[in-house]
Structure formats: structure tokens, C-alpha cells
Image (tube, rainbow, N blue to C red; front, side, top):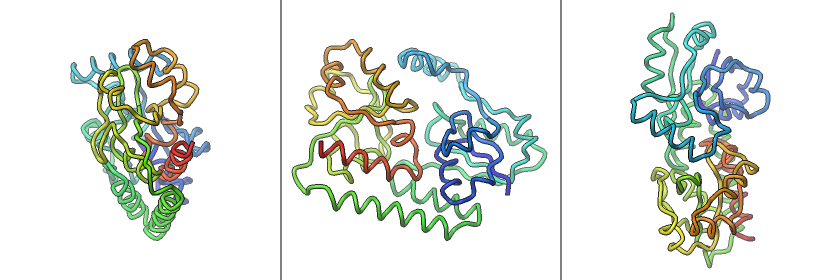
Length: 281
């Protein structure tokens, strides 16, 4: 089977199911496992990731206002790759190709591949998406085993964490403007022994002003920026000028958001384990 993944999490799911060799094309952001970095890039972004986060946010807002997307599909390459299966998403059009752009690209293909759209907003949704990808690859047993393994790791983390007290935790996924992490992240915080005070399970990530966030009086601040590793997140935190914001980020702990908290796939189990260590510290 020839598979094209338009989402890093989907790429990781395929690889975790033992079907990494079936991938013939990936998105411009797919970087794990390392072997996928050699595959053709089916998407590209007009946004320069080296720009400050505030400028990235402004350019993204301008694109949305104009009804355009900074993420495009190389339809000529997609046609040459001739996939049997395309893995897309409907969670966020900021970092990956959305459903409408994919639908338009499909009309230009010689043959219509099967499309599986990932749309998880919580942990159970992520596990269900793994099952759907497994079914599409005819690897349902492998998907069940992967899901059971993740459930075991979640339970193991929960069993190791103190029952009380639960520290009040604020997870930031963007700093200019400040965004609190949503979707599956509040559940991961709970699994790790904390109480997420910035958002609720399954809710979309949301912008909130710094004074409002500081008034929440978090006992732990976790900085896990979407699309950024720890080194980049530290630079972004150092550039925060708002007094309330600086008071929060100066005592924050960092997680590689690009690798862990922002990807609804197998490494959410790693994210729960990392958060548990932060809760204990």
C-alpha cells in the first residue's frame, strides 16, 4: 500500500504500526521517526518558522481574514506519488492542510485514493483515530496493541502520582499572544497528577490575556509551544515583555511541544510521563 501522510501525528501512527515503509510522501512538518525526513514533502508553508511567534500569529490571522491558507499541497507531486491512502486532519488549519484544501487537491488526481481524516480533540479521540488508521491499513490488530500499550502507560503514570494534593497547572502552547493548551492536554495533566486551570478537556486551545492568566495563580507553569522545541521555546519565553507574562514564564518548566503535546499520536504517552515528572518537581 502507498500512503501519504499530511500530518506529523499520522506519520507517527503509521510508523508505530510497523508500516513506515508504506509511506511514500509526508507533510513539510513530519520529522519523526527520523527515517521519514528523507521522504518527498507533499505540503509546504509560506510562513517562515524562524519569525517571532507574534509575527507568525499576525501573518496567520491575515491569511485567515483573506480566506487563504499558508499551507499548500503540491498536487503535481501528489499525482506522481499515486497514493492508495491519504491521511489528513480536521483539527487545525494553522499547521496542516485542512479538509477543503485536500478535497480540492483530490479533484486533480488521476485516481481517487481512500482518505482517512483524523479529528481527535481528546485522548479517547486520539486512540480512536489510531484504530481508524489501523483499519485503513488492514493492521487492526497492531492498532489495538498500540492502543492497549498507551492505555497501560497512562494508567502506570496515574498510579505513580500522589492522590492529593493536585497542583494547579497552566500549560501554555503559544506566548505571543498567550494561548492556553486545550484538546487532549488537560487530560494529560490530570493523568500526570495535576489540575489544568487554563482549559478543559476537549476544548480548543484559546488566547487569554496575561493578567487573567496570572490571576489564576498556577502552582506549575508548563511551556510547551506548538511547533517549537525547547530551545526555541526558551527564546520565545525570554522575549516576553508583559509584566504578568514574565512573572509566569520565568518560573516555567519546558516540554518539547512540537514532539509531544501538540501531536495527537503515540507520543502522548511520553508527554504524560514528562508532565508527571514536572508535577513531582
